[in-house]
Image 1 (cartoon, helix red, strand yellow):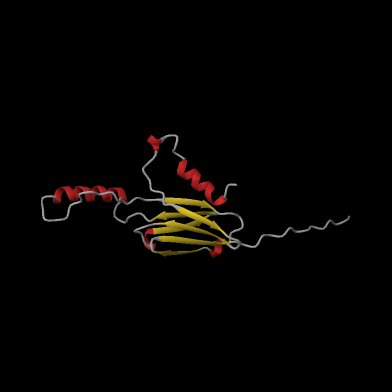
Image 2 (spheres, helix red, strand yellow):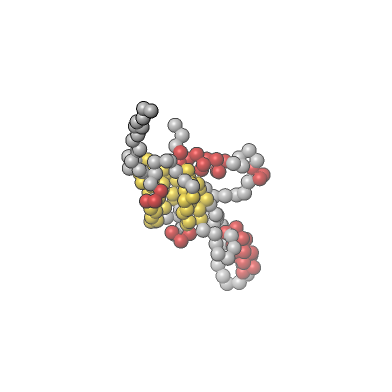
Length: 151
């Protein structure tokens, strides 16, 4: 059974799979989505980030979790500038990267919320590099009987 919370995320993350030359390098943080009787919970690993580095928005039933763009340049430009600076200072008495495997990347994940969510009560917390988004559920609507008037 397909969970509504994963449908859009799968579409957005695989849109360019058939045409890799059109895609841009991207970072997609891992998430866990948990469903309980009273709520849905999204846990996202974001090591090295803080709550100021993440933006959460809700529009027309789509919950979007994205990194906040760097104020000066985008992350890729910042890395290019740092690499250039390292090359220029290699002869000076400054630290130089010998190996650099950690990179800063922008990300965005989208989740279509099920109809039974209470969108006005969504809450988020950030602790030890893990973002937790709690999405409470509403009580299921009971069927309504409609009486038929006789004319």
